[in-house]
Structures are given as C-alpha cells and as structure tokens.
Image (cartoon, rainbow, N blue to C red; front, side, top):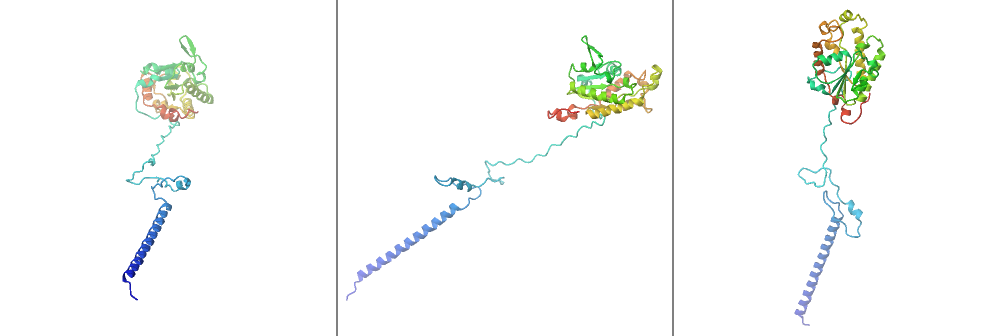
Length: 323
C-alpha cells in the first residue's frame, strides 16, 4: 500500500488550524467574561467622595440612583474648590454688656459741660431755684419755679401764669418737651413732719414728670444745707433744721432709687464741718448768694449723665421704662 504524503500533510494542516481557532475562541470568551465582571463591579461599587453617579436611564429605579449620590462635605479642604458648599462663618465674640447704672448712688463726677447743655432743661422748684436761675449765670433753661411751692402741692397749686392762663407746675411742664428735668423741692415742707407723705409725694411727682416727659433725664436735687443761726436771727423759724433736712435727703435718694431716676448730692458739696451752710453762703440762712449760686451751677455742669446710659434698652427701642 502506497503512502499519500500530500493528503496526509493536508489533514495535519486542517487539524492545526482548527486547534488555533478553538484557542482563539476560548481566549475571546475569557476576555469577554473578564470585561463583564469588571464593568459589573464598577457599576455596583459605592461612588468615591465627590464623584457623582450618572443619572439613571429611563425605566431604572431613580431612588436607588439618588441614594448612591455622595453627600457634600461640611468643610472644604485647603486648596480645594468647593463651589456650592456653604462654609460657616467664624463665631463672633459676644458683645460685652454695659454695666447697668447704679441708681442707689448719687451721680458721679463727670467731664464738665458748657451752659448749652441746659438749653433743653426745665428747672422745677421753689424760691431757692428761682434765685439759682437769676444769679448763677446759667442764661438758659426753663424757669418753672414758684415761691413757697412744696412737693405736696406740685400738681394742685396754680402757681404759674403763662399767656394769661393759670397753670400748675406739672401743667406748665407739659407744654413743651425737655431733655432734662431738674426737681428741687423740700425746704418749705420741713415744718410738716410728715415724712411718709413727703416720700409718697416725691414718688408721685417722679411718676407724673416721667409720664409727661418720657425722654427726659430726671435729676432729683438733694437739698443744700441751711444756716440755722441766720434763720433764727432773720425769721425766728426754729422748725427749719438741718437734722430734718438730712432725713428728707435720705427719702429723696430712696425715691430716686425706687423710681430709677438720678440723685444729685448737693448737700455734701455745700455743707461745712458743723453740718451747716457756711455763713458766707447766704444772708438769711436759706437763699444762696450769687457766689454760691455759681458754685451750684458748676456742680451741675460736672455731674451729668446721658439718657442712653440710664436706660439703654429704652433708648434702643427694646422696651419702655418701668417704675
């Protein structure tokens, strides 16, 4: 039997080609499988920080897609652009609260003002205050005084005539608006010996003044001492004593604290070592000389306080005054 070399060689070539095709086909299947697995892992993995998953195709579960979106970081790291992220402002230091004014103490000494400070001031008082307005050199302010006036009659006595009409001191005070009201009454009341009535009347007077002058600083002027020897020599009135005057000053100071208005300690400014008004300060023991009226004015000019300092909340429109 003869051997057909050409036919045998052709069969071997066909077998080798078939084997190579099988290898290539197998490798393609393995490659495709690896690609499918890789894509599947990439799709199912959680997104990295800052990476946004593409929107879902139609028909897919949009809620599941939304859950894959990364949340925005609270703070951007240094050097990163964090557009759309709100970075909280640095905390601000709390404002320091001002110390409330101490109404239990007399007005402290302050830098001197000039006479124009009293342009919007009203002076309510008796003949002592009238003498002050005439002889101190103040040259401004409203003179609302009446000889013999007492705190007991402040809202009753028709003590002033304005434009032919009779007014009480409180009625006259209500005709204009003032920035300051200086109240000085008490000497004519010394003979009454009604301390509780004096205190109640002063508190009522403060309430009445505040009601008609709500934006004014109310100054309660403590009584300047008397010279009892001069009083006895000129009038013989023994009931006008510094002992009772000091009681009234304490009651006025107490009323000022209760009603949250300011108190001026004029007594300490003018008293001598014996507890009296020096003889050169008066000719009758009550009314002051021109020099002492000028000293009175200098004291007022160096003992002032602003409305905003007294009542910061009311000044800022955050509340009203309560007494």
